[in-house]
Length: 98
Image (cartoon, rainbow, N blue to C red; front, side, top):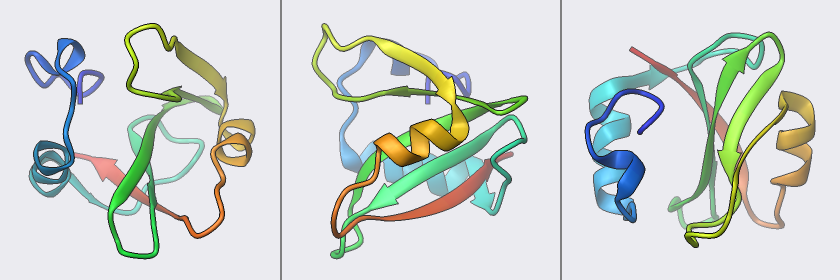
């Protein structure tokens, strides 16, 4: 949300409800891994968001592996980020920032 310009998002501990509201208001289904502004969204079997990242374009993506304050933000090649973020029972979808 911070990468999309949502004021205050970079300094808030983001909970599921405001993030889902952001997804519905500021994104649409779709996007491509090589295109800037694609939100990579992992959900568990119950449909709850478990992790998200955003593509930067040129084959790169930004994510933060955990919500702890000491966890760094990391830029990785998009295919690698997708691979390391896999978890049993999670499925990946994509949404494009508007």
